[in-house]
Amino acid sequence: MQTRFLGIPELAEVPPVAVVVDVMRAFTVAAWAFAQGAEKIVLAESLDEALALKARHPDWVALKDGAPAPGFDAVNSPALLRSVDLAGRTVVQKTTAGTVGALAVKEASLVLCAAFVVAEATARLLRTRAGDGVTFVVTGEDGRADEDLACAQYIARRAAGGGTDAAEYLRRAGASRAASELARGVRQGAHPDDVALCLELDRFPFAMVATSEDSLMILRPYAVPPT
Image (cartoon, rainbow, N blue to C red; front, side, top):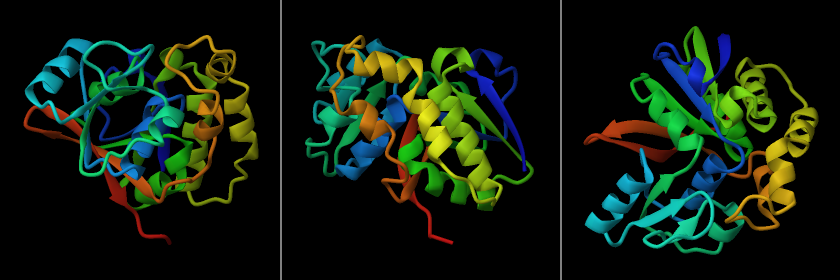
């Protein structure tokens, strides 16, 4: 299986299969939302769109990066979301990098959103559906975020079928700029447990598949049978 690792600005064409990686924190948060019972996640193009969707659907849960803001119900923190009951709810998510990356490849035939918490399920799904190649979209820092690149490289190795020790990939992620900023409280809307939760390997047994539905990009969990 051929693999490419590209930042969002490097996406010159739509790949047939894309894995969009945002470890800290968009797609760790998305996985936690599904674990807390969310039915689907709408990936919003902008804060204004997120607020407009919330206005049309008051029962939806809108979340964003950064500090709490009027109109939004939650922030992009897995630790703050893990105690929220989302059973049957629709979540609207807008983040700086993850949702932007997913929307950039929305025309791909298969779009997966990933982080370490769903790495193995994502790799298993790729083994069955990726065909000859897959593009990993490294969303953070224009493709330079080592937590996202490490996760992408780990998933790629697992998808190729080889045995891979995750320790070095997790170490890189834990030493990344994003992890340091979260740990030091530089980023708003964060919790002290966020880094540890983002570094939990294979906490959830599902992959996350994004598809276009009625002009919206919708993310849903996808159960992948163990091999």
